[in-house]
Structure formats: structure tokens, C-alpha cells
Image 1 (cartoon, rainbow, N blue to C red):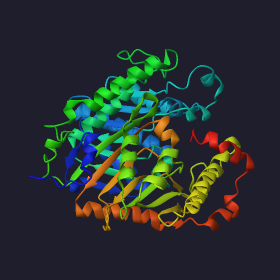
Image 2 (image 1 turned 120 degrees about the horizontal axis):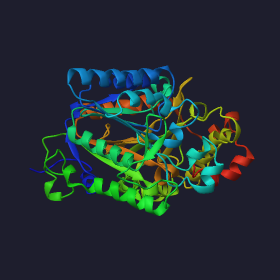
Image 3 (image 1 turned 45 degrees about the horizontal axis):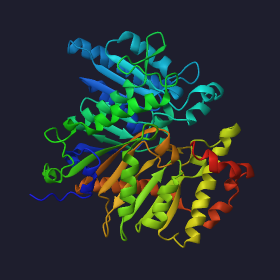
Image 4 (image 1 turned 180 degrees about the vertical axis):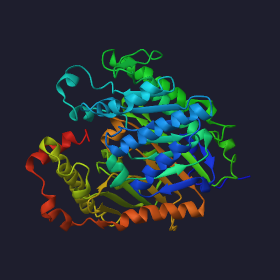
Length: 473
């Protein structure tokens, strides 16, 4: 039986998990994301995995933690066993301030110490003099874990959203729920636990320790030793044969590509960990953009538009597809209104997009590659991802969703993960189309006049430093 799966080459670079399109739900609003997190927590039976940059400290975040505690208590009472809860956050972001992610999770950890683990990734690049002089907030620019995976038993939410009040109320992001796919859930559980194994382990007294099975300190021990050991663990996970054949996966062997052709949707996890030399997502993006031929259309969104030079070069000189790139207007950028040096970040993003627009105009490519700005009153914009429309088709057959913003730090500094979803399911393709249509309906196309507005003023000092600081945000 010949497989009619589009973009089948993705199986060359990633495990493939086949599902029915009916198992996938696209969530639209932050409130729906939050309610789904709570609903899944309330009904969970065996495991919860939460990987995020950080957990906020407000009432809604406390409500989520209370749900976790209730479920741990319920499973212990009803099932006569412990509910396994795995939390992975970033050390620097999760430790910011006196009240932080760690202090919010401590009561849960203290009550269920044997079944709840909280791991805090610390980049090996923040060390020595740099670690000593960089204050909170600024130390986060060196590198983070940016993974966004929310997993309940055998169901997985892939998103770009963090776990905090804004992301539950008025910060627009993307959220896709894949239900009842045990192999995919097992993969992401293993991925998060692998990163957790070379992260700090939070203790019940709010101290942290190095995982005994790893034994290498991220900033006190040799940097190269840490990176090689961490890389080895991730590479072994990605190469593990259990993700292929016989567990709901299709594998890399082209002879097996007819396997699971009774399904209509295929899921490919893509991992990017630049500091460790893991470039699966970057390699896939480059191949995808280069292979996009004339007549194909790609919609690409980034909450923080700062494409790498290589991605820009591919778009301008190697790809023939039509592009519509969606980014934040200044007023909905997450850094809008920031003070001090951070206040220069929004003008820097304006400057980066302006230079790219000018390049498009100089190369007479502004009709093939169009820029759009999202605006929604009293909201911020954190959407990221890609929708791929084949030649002559009005519905996408693929989307990328996850944590990456396609910028320098996503490629080189942070730990990232995306999911490529390829589908022939008409209903799912329609929902993916509606998803990005809703976003683009709240946007306006960028023109020369856009950069003449008063709110697009770029201070001279920002122009001077952008070429350097764009590698940190």
C-alpha cells in the first residue's frame, strides 16, 4: 500500500507518530488554555509533565498548583498509588525575586516528595565573571530552557505559552492538544526527564542539588564536559529505537513509510538545543524553507521577529514560495513600556523589521514576502509557528508549533522543541486555516508608511547596539 503522506521526508530527521486528525484539538484563547490545563489535571490518573520557562506567582498560578495538589491526593486515595508529577523550569527565571516559581511549588514538593520532582535547568554558558556581574533578568539573556510541554497521562498540549497570569488571560499564543497518543506522550516525557537529569533538583528546603546520575555541575565544573555529557543523553534519546516501529512510530526507513497509512495525521517532534550542539529543528527549518517552491504559501509568526541571518538569506535568495510573516506591533510586544536598557528592546525589534523590509524593497521582493503586524487592544502577542499551504491549495497541510521564535537565541542559546503536524484530514486542515486566519484578521500589512509613524521612532543608540544585542533576545 503506497503511503500518501505529504512531507514524508520529515521521517528522515525525526521519529514519526501517526494519529487520527480527530485526536487533535486547536485551542484558541488563553482562557481556554488555562481551563484545559485544570480540566486535564483534575482527571489525570498516572502522570503529569509540565515543562515551561517559569511558573508565575499570582492567584491563577496558585489555583493551578492547588489543582495539582488535589489530584495528587485523589490518586493516592482512589488508586492507592502516587501520581507522578514532573516539573521542568528554568533556574534563572524560576528563581527571580523572593517569591518565585520555586517558592510556589515548595508546599507541593514537601507534601509529595516521593512522587513530585521539580527540576531547574541552568545553562552552562552562564558562569564565572559573567554569572557574578549579571543581575536578575539580564542573566536570562545568556540561555534558558524554553521548552513548553504540558502532558497529562497520554494527552499532550504543545504550545509557546508559559504558565503565568498573562498567558492565561490576555497574551495571545498557540495551543494544540493531542489526545490519547501514548507513544508521543512517552517521547515528550522522556525528553523532559532527560533535560531534568542534567538540571538542578529542587529540595524541600528550597536548596538545589545536582542530579546524582549526572554528577556534573553546570557552572562550577568544566563547561565542555557538561555540554558533551548532556548532549550524549539527548542524542541517545532521539536515536532510541523504541520511538520507531511497533510503538506507534514509523521510523526513518523508507521501506516502512507505508506503515500506519490508515492514519491521516503524522506528528514529528523537533528538538533544538544550540548550546549542546543539537540542531534538529534548525536543520529541518532550513530544508523546509529551501524546498518551498513557487506557488507554495507559508505563513510564519514570531512574537519576537528576529530571524537568523541564515533564515533570512534562505527566504530572500533560495526559496521561491510566497511568505506572509506575522509579528507584534510595538504596543503588543511583551517588552512594551519597559524601563531602563530593556526599554530599548521594542525599538530594536522595530529596527530589525525595518531593515528587513528595506531589503525586501531593494530586492523587489515585497510582493512575494509580506510583513504583517498584529494588534489587539490591551493584549500582548506571543504567537509563534508556521502554516504550510501546498501549491494551489486553500488549506494548510502542515503546521509547526512549539517554543521557538526562529531567532538567534532560539537557534543558539536556548533549549527549544517544536512539533511538526502533517495532515490530510480535511477538518483539521480547516481548523488550522481558521486558526491563522483569526490571527491575521487582527493584523495590518506593513508598508513604507508604517515606519514613518511617531510610535516607530528608533533612538540612535538602539541603531548602534542592535547588531550586537539582537543575539540575546
